[in-house]
Length: 383
Picture 1 (cartoon, rainbow, N blue to C red):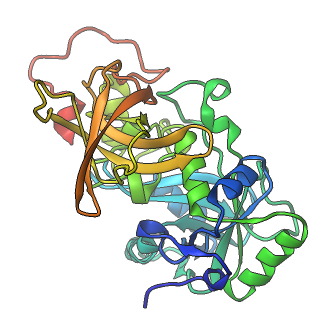
Picture 2 (picture 1 turned 180 degrees about the horizontal axis):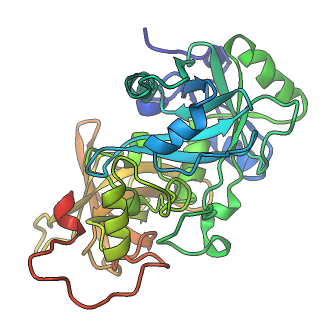
């Protein structure tokens, strides 16, 4: 049965679609909701997210050994992020991580939670761990707060984006120049039966309820990639600048680590994430999944060079989106985004804002020791 939040019964609530189905897109005034959230004073129903709980004394050392993140010794109420990668280094799961001293909580997309829990269960062997898909028992509430949960508070995951965590690196600008530094965000986990009461308590303190129109607009503005939008079956972490928060490049061996190290050392990931500023003069705008093209000659369609992965209407910036492009698309080229909306073909122009540079080099890439040995393949051949 498809999930539907009890908060969708609120007057004016309009249901979200796609990966946000089950909660509200907005509650009647999306612009006001977005402004309240950007000012740091709103609460968001995120109860459609998936939650996996891992208990047992071996949980942190075990998760450390099979994922991309340094988790051994993770202190209670300290948030981080991990990736589960394929043997070829492609992203299979993205999860926020926080430990409460008794269990480790993994927050992911709702559709991913059963698969993540299942994979973890197959990987536990004889270790002292217990994996539970806790999505039906626990729900997340979003808050524009830039702090970890304190002792005595509910389990809380704080999004460190765009901070470069220990052992990470970056492809995009430093934190002080990154638009994501202006987006505080955390998820508070509450028993699902208490969701409405927990939201009501925040409303009583003066925070209005906002929908995913607002959260997605601020996420896109912050260049924050999301598994349900920016990740496909070919994605490697470097393409989305996820080595900032989700990868420890100096830790020991784990599945997919060879690709992570090789692309970091050699540079040039096959694709790159960009933010697009779309022409908003048309009544209709393309939706996520639309093709991104180079401008065509004489009115003919141009070459497809990528995909619009996220689309949002920002209260100040207008229509913006995230897109994944081929790495060699010139950074100063105006692009065209074309798709079908309500049976009508549309095409709008879009300007790039660079997130991952076209040269594909991280800021701490090792110095080159000369050309590759003849016959040795670069990272693009791995993926």
